[in-house]
Amino acid sequence: MKVESLASNEIWNMLGFFSRNGGVWHVRVQVLADKSNASEKYVQELLIKLYQLGLVSLKTWSKAAWREVSYNECLTEYFFDNRDDANYVRVTPLFNS
Image 1: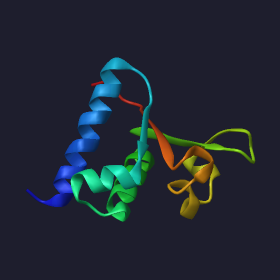
Image 2: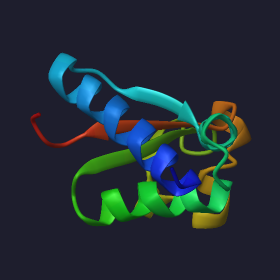
Image 3: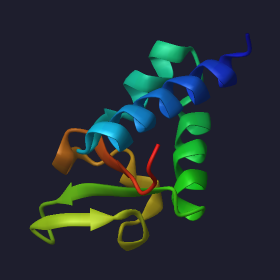
């Protein structure tokens, strides 16, 4: 199985779980990439694609704004490496499974 497939399957499995059960998936891209042996860049691009398709919302905490900020509000090069939120990204499925 290709490395990218492992990362994609892991993401879809977690999104399906949170879609069925509600809630927000707090994920570190670096950890997910290591777990599936994929590159961080691949995992980031996949999450961004899901966001662009309207399938998920992506948010992180911003100390400067003192609130959660969405992917389109944040400088993209810092979104996934946001020290304010310990590198966590909050992924919420916007679909029902």
